[in-house]
Length: 211
Ligand SMILES: *[C@@H]1O[C@H](CO)[C@@H](O)[C@H](O)[C@H]1NC(C)=O
Ligand SMILES: *[C@@H]1O[C@H](CO)[C@@H](O)[C@H](O)[C@H]1NC(C)=O
Image 1 (cartoon, rainbow, N blue to C red):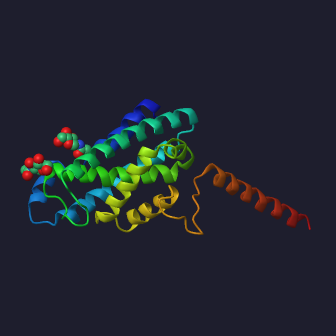
Image 2 (cartoon, rainbow, N blue to C red):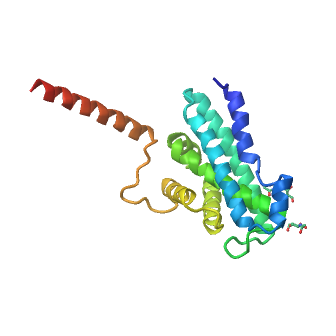
Image 3 (tube, rainbow, N blue to C red):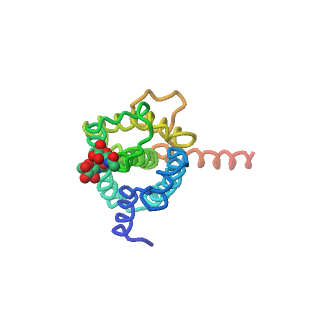
């Protein structure tokens, strides 16, 4: 069993480490392989690690500590996002118009935005009650996440599963209207409904057996 301290360190490292800076990747980035395609592969790999981290947090059953841990993570996540946004804006980088950045410094900020936006998506979808409790009333975070989702959608990095994630998280935080059939199965309310539905099915089965 991991302690919450170890888990916190692990989760924070997932937020801040960028995976495209080792020598091999540097060579690839400056070489002939299309950098965006190469980056997208790293992005998918990194997404897998992030999702594992969020799942381990989901399974953490001490609610007070879970809340504290998520709070620390969100503070860090939005700090990184805010700094990356400031840099990219200052450098005049426009996603969707400017090509995928060759410049390593720019690429690092770019990657901080797309990776931490996706991580936020995992967090708000899988731990909705905890994250809404911290995020909804924070107007600064809301505005920043709006920018990040726009940036990510334009980045050309999100496709398939990650594009779906971006769409679902946008509904979850009301950036776009919720579709009629949108439900988040991870809310406490929906978890309870699911348990109730299971009980009802069992009860009905019992009654039928008596008949
Ligand atoms: C933003 O730019 C500053 C100064 O160049 C740099 O120290 C910092 O690491 C950058 N942060 C991000 C997230 O791009
Ligand atoms: C990369 O971009 C940053 C920010 O625009 C700039 O300061 C730096 O000189 C660039 N580096 C290279 C190698 O072009």
